[in-house]
Length: 558
Image (cartoon, rainbow, N blue to C red; front, side, top):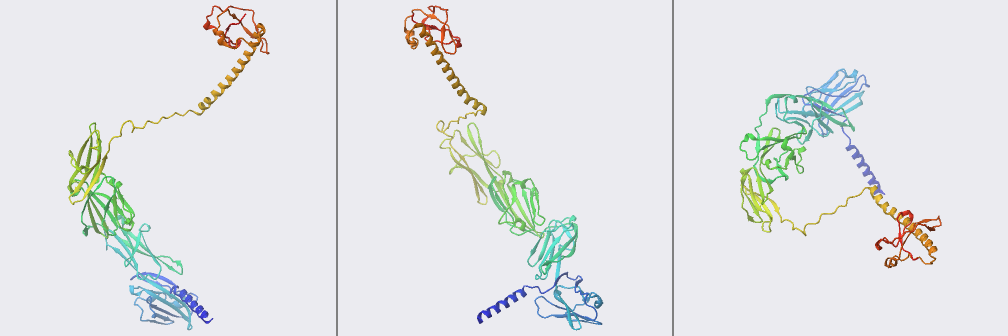
């Protein structure tokens, strides 16, 4: 029981200590520039009459308060911590209730200030103010040469207050700024021009009692001179000699320093004049601006591990053959230049087919750093020719044979010993016949309406056929009945046409038959004609009705 009680007491004390340790030891924050008049505000208009005022101060982290100024009706006393410039803002404070303290602080005057108001020996009001000293620096000073880098630096001497510093241009636009250790909050404008002259504002925000107070604003006048800056502090790194294939990504490295902006220059390949250097690309990380040229379309700022927005620069080039040459990458930091040079050769292999041969050409730029170039088939060195500087060719007779098929490699060797190559595969032609697959047969598609019509045609034809067969069947029955009546026979003599064709002709009778009515009974017309004039090949064993209008020559026994 006693152990639990002690634990509760300890936890309670710890909670109380934690809550108090997280509390601020001041009621307000005042930011002041060193040497400028500053007011520490302490006002209470509710107290009147005979009052006593004490201002005391101590540095941040100190335990003991020291008297700065003491005043009462008719008497004033300055303590050991007082400065020559310290005075009350209103000497008639007993009537107005304004007890504020005014002075021009120095860097060592920052810290905590306590305003205590007493009346009749009773403490009436107490207020603690944190004084923060701000230092503002403009470089270069006193005037800024053109093309130089303007630096605006602001720093507070204590970080115990939650302060935030921003810089604003004369147009009221917030500038990109960074908080740098042991330096302060920095904003830069590289390559300034006379149009950049004007009044720049430094704004300091702070938090008091979980609220963001109104910012303190300090103005800085910037004047850009007519003279142009001369950059003499240049650090040159070693020049790199290298080569790459055309249309492949190649890294163009820059000095490994964090800079303000980067500029890339280029001297075209196989030229000797230094005056032929051309501007290619520029990126200003403070302004967030980029300047490009036509060649910049094949250039881009490199990604991780590089970070251009933080000042770590490098490029990636996807070159054409004519993009070889000398590349100079200059990184600028506070008007200091760090330079990196790269001599680049670019090679490209091309194939041209003629009637009797295949011409393989290997083209390369920046010949000054190329020691040798050759063509090889596998490991065998080939005969070569060169009609143009920077190009070697070799011929492959046509047709391609197993001896001439294979990987043809062009190899460049630089003067520094580095080698680079590109391979062109030459393959045998496909075998005729078996290797040639027949062309696929494509069946044209028919319109939907035509497909429907084609489906209906056989159905209609079938229906008509059934109808004709039925009518023919009915006609046959009628004729058979009629002839049977006249002959007196019970069997139809026309049922076997082959018997009639083979029988000798004994006379024929021509008959027209027409139906008597709906009973399918046909009568024999009175007109008879002999069919002896017809040849046997014209005698048909079949007959048709009057509907078909086909006369029939038939043979019957008399």
